Length: 217
Image (tube, rainbow, N blue to C red):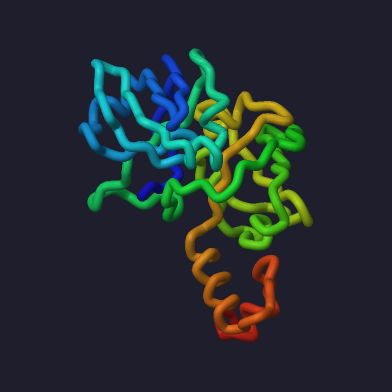
């Protein structure tokens, strides 16, 4: 479990692909100080298990399924990645509850200046966008962000200077891929509504359906 607050920008040392998956090595001077063998680390939003610690370099085994469902397979030596160690019981929940299980891979459609900040439009499937609500939380490459606008096949977020300086979204440009995870509460509500209306396929949650089922007044 994570919070979506990136602790460090790590650097990819190596990615070795095989028929069964991949082995990823990441230089992480800060995160490596506190992790243990077998511990979990969010790498660009994907929860990975630490399989080796070599000084300041962490190694992870990536399954074929994770390669299919995330953008990790496209990493190259020298690429920067967002890192966050697993949440501990005594830690502050400063972002939102993040599982590290990527739902879909989206892409940056546009990035425009908004004063000192950046407004970023992210293309995603309609099914994923249907899980989002305005002012709700979304995870983009492991970063906890607030949804600003909802479109049919995209959503927007605003990136403050601190986030731009300390995460990959500050230097990623269109059409870079990004790992996306919807708020887990929204996914449970969507599943509940699907079970309450058998035979009816829902593309997402609407304010009307939430009112109908008593989630909001």
